[in-house]
Image (cartoon, rainbow, N blue to C red; front, side, top):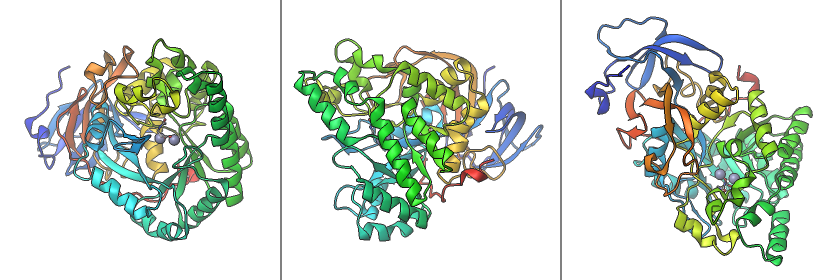
Length: 476
Ligand code: URP
Ligand code: ZN
Ligand code: ZN
């Protein structure tokens, strides 16, 4: 079937009524054959049969219609490790929309001495007017003090309702006492924290041991961050959260040992949300032993763990023990990675993924690992929308919601490669991987913004102020 794209849709004419006809609408709880009518950026109707004489009709038979995917974990234009990420908001959000992601939530980062408002203003300057998908911000807190605590209520009322805390990294490290104080304050103010769980002290000691043995290669990165590093920090965080009586999110979970700590906390009655990322589901630790300097492409923290961890993460998704799959897109070029050719601790940590996530999750999740399309919808769209306070504006195809719609062709087979990616980075960590399924048409607030991996309309993304997170008890 050849989908006919009206010219008006390629420009700014989304005020025209558009009818997506003959597709299968996916939500977190069901799939159903339905037509979708949209106008002025919103969904007007979702019904089995819509006949609208004055609407432009696009035939989407044989296609799945997902609510626009949300990537709740990106780092664009981030100054870190003496350099700046390869993707900024222009290239990062173009990569996002090309792959079917219509909203990202990036980590506005408070550097030492800054107020939260300064950090937020800095991130608005980076993003505003440059984004090709919608965007919101979390705030990564690195400098906690009385005046920052006082800012929290206004920050939350301005639509930044989630925060990130790091239990490792010199510049961002947060000690237990401060984590406790922040969680207690967030509970009062109605915010929620996502926490990077790794034990800083163990990592430092293991790095010293590796270097003392003369091990400076990528392999030593894996040796310095075993699963217990994540598990210890996750367990400690969750005990702190128990005392503070505050829900938390464990971001980028990579290990079974880490999950066991989450299970204990849930058994104690705590509200814990969990995010993982495609790299932990697709690769295992063998990537750190690739020939030459290849392994540097996968130098990320937490590290990619053992095969048994990878398999366990799929089981946890299948049983909905994990709530979201984001990317932690934090890209560096090969020449940036080369800074650590002789010393693995100098390799900037992070990898791209914002563009690849939907196709990876459809191909590896739905086609190969038994996820349902409803689960894919939950992990990539509905759950992040609920957890980060944008549901039902986003995360669902329903009357009144933003017309962010991904027309998914389940039959398209293609191969991931640096040559066909939009992200501004000179390698693809998924190079040569054949996948099934592709975002054929991507509508952002009713406007056709991307088609088959090509961006048609740039910089029409806008800032989304978010509400407080929807509590788990209200999710169904
Ligand atoms: O290696 C990673 N993941 N870099 C990005 C920052 C973070 O820890 O999320
Ligand atoms: Zn992190
Ligand atoms: Zn991150």
